[in-house]
Length: 122
Image (cartoon, rainbow, N blue to C red):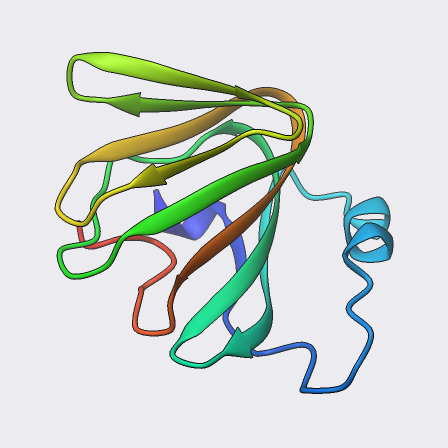
C-alpha cells in the first residue's frame, strides 16, 4: 500500500522561483510519484506522475483538487467513477472515500491544504 509510492512532502520551490513542473515530470521514471511543488497560503500544490492505482482512502478534514496535465485519470468513488482527460479537474470533498488510478502514464497537479497526509487517512 503506501510503501509502493514515491512521495516527497518536502517543498521543492519557494516564493519567486520558477516552478519547472514539465522538467520534473519528464525526468520521472517512477510508476507512482508525487512531489510537493510549493506552498500557497495554507495550501500546497503537488505534482504527480501516475500509472496504476492508488489505495482507497479519504481526507477527513480537507478537500482535494486533481487537475490533469497529460494522460487520463480515473477517480473511483463509492458508486461511480469520474474520468478526467488533459485540461480537466475534479474536486473530491473532505470525507469522501476515493481511489485515483491511471491506466497509462498520467501527469496531475493536486491542490490541497498543507495539512493533508499525501497517503490519505486510512
